[in-house]
Image (cartoon, rainbow, N blue to C red; front, side, top):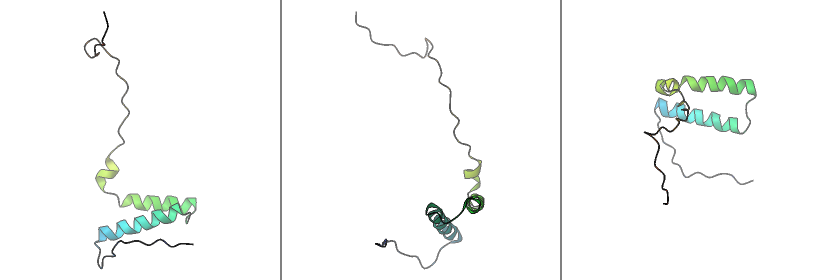
Length: 82
C-alpha cells in the first residue's frame, strides 16, 4: 500500500483559529473514512457548528424564486420572417 506524501510545510506555531480549523479537517477526514458511528458523527457535527462564524450560521440558503410569467412589457421580441 502506497503512503501519501504531502509537500505542505508544517508551521511551528498556529493561531487558535488555525488549530481549530486543522482539527475540524482531521475529524472530517476521519468521518469520510468511516471512523465514527452515526451518534458520534452527529455529536461531532454539532460541535463543529458551534465554531462556525455567526454570519455563516445566520445566512439562510437562497430561496428559490418562482418563475415570473412574461408580460408584454418584459417579453423579448422574437424575430419573424415576413
